[in-house]
Image (cartoon, rainbow, N blue to C red):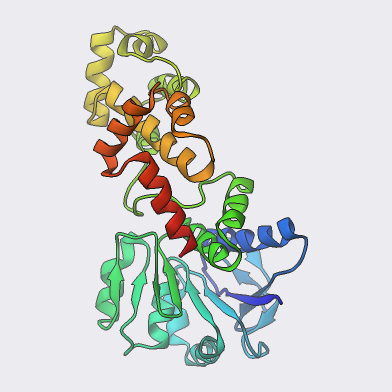
Length: 321
């Protein structure tokens, strides 16, 4: 039996908040070759909706015409405060929420969810830039800033933007198992569940934002040769600098040495492989350039407090919760 999933959109909604989770559910339908999730977009009326990005779209139906939903997904965006002020819209949303098995908020959609039940002691996540405002606007809400997503009874909420995809994958795992969530993640070319919280940036992203274009060739070289022996001398050669000068500039810009950066990238790749593949620890140690399981295990444990095997077991348990 299919679940009816309604995505509430409004003027100045965030496009990624809608498209990311919507595509996750739609991919399950494609992979199973049947409509296990009936997906509809909902709005207050049938006039064109304009997203923050300027994209215009039409909803499939109106809130008042929708009689019941299994899952109500409330999208985030700059327009969320205007929604809260519209009592007619809030009344319809509250009606649908009361009959739904799950209420899901993406990013700043948490403000709308909190406004549905302002006296309810919910635990909610939202974009890290809006946590203080959410807590101040709704004192009964416990705001979580160190998680990609959280559950509070039948209410599920995610942090900013792409964290909605992580939450959708978690719901897929609950409904259809970890293997299906993994298939969807692989199809979408992403991890089935990212580790850490929404305030953390990967070493690679930090490098892309911090280093000059000249140094990008060295970063690309590391990515392409992560399984091979690497040294400061080899990396310095990619940007035609002396090893000493390369080490000094890189450390000054990044706050860590080049070889610590390489190690961090190797560890991040190891985490991804532990979550999205069935490779042995020995094979992962080769693919990530550590060369031997003992070295991978030692560095991984120092960085994350658990062994690679424990990390994989914990990850599998979380997905199956």
